[in-house]
Image (cartoon, rainbow, N blue to C red):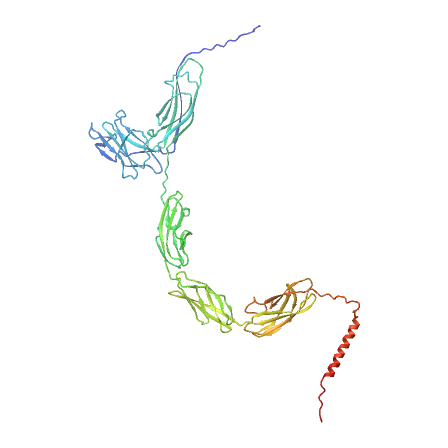
Length: 578
């Protein structure tokens, strides 16, 4: 093998020592820090005083203590940790204690805690600090335990580092929060940072630094510190929204059946942030059976239920857009009134039959009384309240008015009942007669219909219809006139059909209801008729057969003989004797 040229790559590795720094920073701004300073000039002082540096003992070498005024946790927030600062941090002999309360007046005994310890979730807290040599310059409490959370990854080779001095650090407000070793892998860390904040600040700077301290043999290596997220929690912002304020409606006293009342309401309400039209108004009524309560065009409307009395409790709730509430509970008293009985209207004209007991319905009610009496101004009209009827036996035809009175224990109601007293005929089919002879197919039968007027006045032009099995036989000649109690008769000629063994013969009087009667349901009657088969003529034997001509001649001869015999036997004529 021939080689034309040869190239050499020479790599030289040399140990490497030294340090490198990488950093990134960000500022969170626009929010007030969730921390509050305690007023060191107020509270309870025991052998301690507020001086130019802060709180220090009044007598050198002796212990003094300061107890803060009660601190209230902001609404809907939680209390965090207590922090204090000293004039000389090296002289830290401070003893920190706290007492808690749910109402701000009654507190527990004081309990010793370490600085930066998370307090239990309480509404009120009082802080006590005791010292001999320290000068306490400030005391603060953070809210919601503000914390920083960081997550990320360290990727690559860390063999070339001096692991003791290779670190990455977290700064908040220029102070170190945490100093972490550089170890490959993912991480997720969280630290409280309230002690690094100051009350009143509206921004905080977060900085992350990596310090690489090399102790390498010269091998190639790559190391990456990757920060994926930085989150600060605990901030809050309170917006104060006052409760709505309304002028109370107050208790109401009304009288039964008075109708009701309208009470101005919405225009008598105010709210610091919500317009009146946007207020939500809820009304709860405990007794809608006696009064209905609603909101109409901004006013509370009370509408009484007819004939009801008693008491109702109404709760009115006004809610603004933030959910703040104003509420009032008032009582509505409805005083009872003794109502008069009520009689419903009668028809304009009620027809009744002359001297026939007629019942007319009486509708009435009285919500206040069950003990009622009733009477009329006519002796022939009486009231039966239990059955709700007026019983009338009118003695004279014509138009009459009856005054109906219904009374309770204190008052009466009256209504007039107008009557038209009628004397009417009343037609009935008294019987249907077809004789006693046997009825055969093909016969022509006279069906006699007997009609009687059982009413109290005459009936004229009375029509009668005859049917056989609901098939018209004939409409008889009308009966021109029937007096009360009189009986009339008409005849319908019926041709007996073939093939029917039994036939129902029916008759109807005044089928067209042209005559006003006492009753219209008694105008029909019927009978059942049995039909015999037609008798067929049998042929006569040859020896006895007689022609029709011979039979006619025989009949004439017999008739002449009878006449002659009658003339022979009859008495002689009466003669006048001269």
